[in-house]
Length: 168
Picture 1: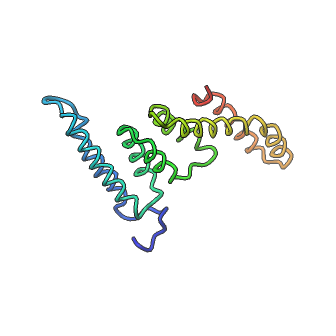
Picture 2: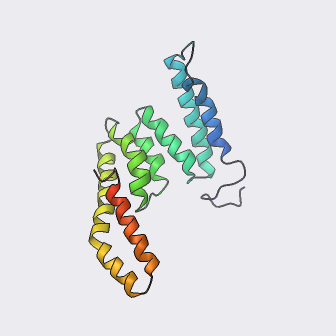
Picture 3: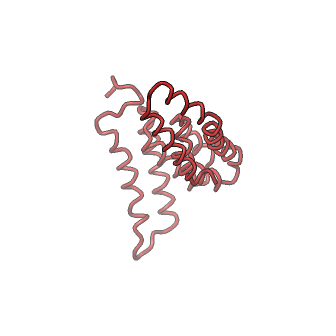
């Protein structure tokens, strides 16, 4: 596993996420007696430690980084939540899906995370603006090159962006 790139998954790497989930599961199940707040906090902190340890070798594993960002958000720690998320190097179209559906709610809900929330909102707005600005030219170039399937893909993408709840 040492020979793998930090972005590649090795054997057993996904077990780190399973271990973190197993630490949290008893606290989320409910039932009687209800878990004490201190037990929930302890489980969350233990899960974060497991996720961070697993992220040392595989720095770009989305299952670990997204879980860690969510836990940091629940713990009220905007800086580590943002750092864990930024390690994924989210790019252009992913801002509509991953950023809009995952990190934006975390950063908007945290006190002191206004700059991060603004950055995420700006990235989402840039994606939509870029598409509106360049859609016509992209369609024309694809049609002119005879890439008719690309024309259909561009149109489908435009419809998907228009229906996106991050656009609101």
